Image 1 (cartoon, rainbow, N blue to C red):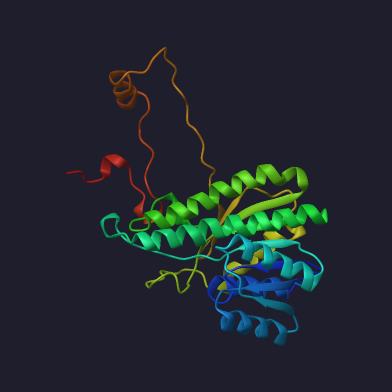
Image 2: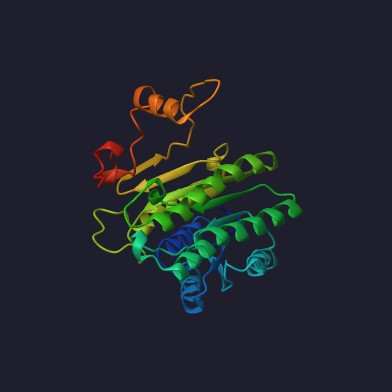
Length: 284
């Protein structure tokens, strides 16, 4: 394997299993020293052992990304152990599926704390340290196609949509510092996704995208969401505001008129096999 990350030090959160494990292993095989973060100590240590046995360098960490102080200590562990920090993979996440009338508020709060706030906490800690070190670097967030609309995953998708928005904003803020921020949207076989897997990619088949985004091969690439699904590789379109109509004032009748005559057809909802126009949806 090419050594795209020789001499780099990378943090991967939620790296004890699944996609996180695959990311950590691929990054290590590409030459980086890796902090393998997971609240499951045994899982983190197992991945570290795999990396070391393969000739790589790794350090376990069990801080929770939901704790800002823990996120800061995670970043400091990387710097103290390896002498530097070059990249962060915000992979730690929870999955939750429920229809709106069967939601669990405790589960919703956990999703927000891990998927969104965990990404924010680790990202802010890494950004602060990179600035102190006077270094450029790369952050790779993890989002999901569910944020485009998918049955039964509205709240999970909302957290991942927030991560996508965070990626766009951080990319703009950090470009002057030479810190690139991108995201990956994987469709892969993991413990988070119940069967059928319908040709989903294996975690090891997805990991090269993360290594690429962390490496110098991705110079000039920032603010992008890379979709890796089945045999495919592509980019998610950025949200955009469509053509605006102007008037001196907008009353309800005016709004109804332009919706029926000028603003249509309405944008489809969802993605993949669930993508459909609002007019096609059954309404009682």
